[in-house]
Amino acid sequence: MSALLTPAPPAGTEMLPQEHQRLAAQVRDFADEVVAPASYEYDTARRLPMEIIAEMGRMGLFGLPIPREYDGQGRDYLSLCVAVEQLARVDQSIAVTLEAGLGLGAMPILSYGTEAQKRRYLPALARGEELAAFGLTEAEAGSDAGATRTTARREDGQWVIDGSKQFITNSGTPITSLVTITAVTGQKRAADGRTVPELSSIIVPTGTPGLTVLPSYDKVGWHTSDTHPLLLEDVRVPEENLLGQQGRGFANFLASLDQGRVAIAALCVGAAQGCLEQAVERARSRIVFDKPLGEHQHIAFTLARMQARVASARALMHEAARRLDAGIPFSQEASIAKLVGSHAAADNARDACQIWGGYGFLNENVVSRHYRDSRVLQVGEGTDEVQLGIIAKHLGFPGALAG
Image 1 (cartoon, rainbow, N blue to C red):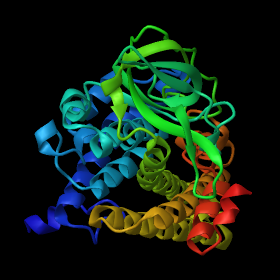
Image 2: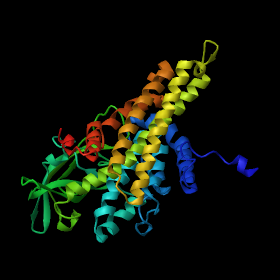
Image 3: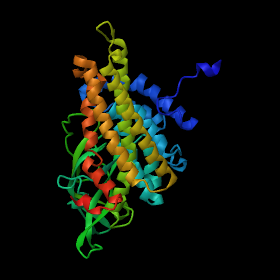
Image 4: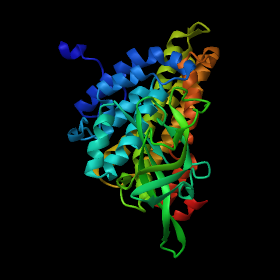
């Protein structure tokens, strides 16, 4: 009898191990009971709700893939994806705060940091007491990250950094403790004989003199996600703040972006699933011409297409996460999952708004927020064009990435 009363696992988790199903159910309930009721208020105020972030920290979400020795949960990367998906169903801003804080903030330190750096920074990040940011994009260096203009030079045992960064998530919250940035630290000879900039990664703690967090952007969506430009003027940090080997910053950040894309693909799946759930609810409750809206074939077929998009995107995301956890190449799979998932989210948001009609045009309706929020998914953490270029590269056409 008790088995009959056991709640069904969240959609799409039925074939996952029990531990993933339990995590998904826990985060789903938190999303529905705590995040969703507050989403419209914080979206309107354009403020990241730190009390919700603190609760996520107490739940251990910010430490899911971080080893226990650094106060993490010691779980796999798929666990992070499961959590991000459930949050994104109701609020993409909250989901991307977790995704960027871990996938782009903490994971580079875990992957490339010295033991001293890991022990200094990771425990507070894993507990959710602090957040880290990932400073790659610049005004002239987005998809072409190799065009970085920020520079760092050695002087008296320190790195002296000058430059600027754009669109940096989690860079100005009250608990942001560091930004890892890429900077040109010299020149090197490329395989084809050309002289190219040498890029390195450097950890810059917040509060370092010369690091200025500029006012947040007025964005179309992701209103509660903390996003700022950064200015670095004569910023000085110790030489030991170098993250990874000098000259390996570009390669390391590309690898970090591959990891991040798996989690952002999970966010896409969650957004698409959330739109589907809202559309199905409306199709069942709205009576049009004496029968539920969903009984009209056009609407039923629209819902079926929405479900197909979710199922396809989720399968691709799970495949990329499993490959990452297994330690086998996953770059192409991450790009495919992100490409397909971002379109699933955008298309489902459009269809959900249509099914909701005039009510879908109101900001208080979660589908309208998904409609705004989902647009950035085809741009952030690698545009559609970058994903297509990566996929083409794996097919044997590396020149596609250069246009």
